[in-house]
Image (cartoon, rainbow, N blue to C red; front, side):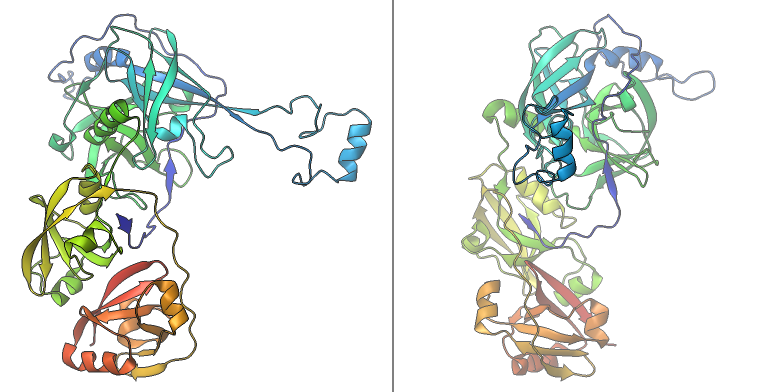
Length: 497
């Protein structure tokens, strides 16, 4: 499932694994974890007392330390200092120079980090974040899986861990340690959790082992920029670097999430934290155990959300559903007959409340699964069936068209445009359209920009200026333009005042 447009509304800082410095250890507990209690009793001040709960679930929470070896640049034509006379001077006098063959410390650079995790089965399976054991794929080292992963229990026992698999799309990783009869967490149901209920987090913020913080669930099903597959749980629990991968517990002692990200302008806690729902993580865990990798279904459409104006343009009674902006050639969606302008209302009976629900629901299906889609088209709903393919890596965006001077469509609309030339149409993979040369008035207020390519008006294809004028005369004062911007197609509702 491709994403139409990603809007970065705020900056996110990952609660990433913390580089190791001086680390202080908390008190160890050497008793195995009994079954968690059903409730947390209030203390004499009427507030919840987490003491018994922490004693019960704490032994299943682990500290994770990682070692990653990154190759150093060598002294060759690719090294910017290779021909530096100052470096040559140091070499002549035997001073060690980074990157020079034979100099001390020129082996692989060692990166160290820490994070948190929790035991999900007595035979040694541990869940954590993918970025704890694999790092950032855009950073130095390319996000390679750590060469050494050590899991430390609350009783100070240490185990070398094997990375069974990682899933970067959900930021979940599964580890395995060689041990038996381990204390394991009790898996809860994130769907049953409620906004406002108390939760606690356990982990190793800044290297301080077995740290407990408490707060409430602030919101559910949060959609973050560039995230299509995780409906995050938002909390106000204090989460900091080193907490990554640790569990989020409810008051019944059940894990309902994995602490993963924070909102921050400083890199530290600011009152907004995000956790991956445990059902998402356990689905990833089961696939990694069974297949060693995660398989996701693919429908082959780009989607966008619906607002009031778009919903009215398509004759919908409300704004629920996922608007199809484009359909990939040869995809399951094309084979099923889906078209740009369709609105997907449900999949296998599950209602699509927001457009972001659809990628997650499709992604949870196995490739080869046949699904039923309820689709709104031409003012009524209909049902189509599609057989999902396996989701592959996303394709690179296309280059935007180059404006060359266009024809005025109408002063009231505020649009001037020209037809695509054959070369531009071929590059964009379309049969035709109009390149926006000037944007003002109603279309500018709607967000249409110079360089956008108009493909259709109210689902009617547009290839000439005369066609667009004719369709505008019949459309009235409210209509939807299908435009292509770079590699994405989106519907833009336009209202002429």
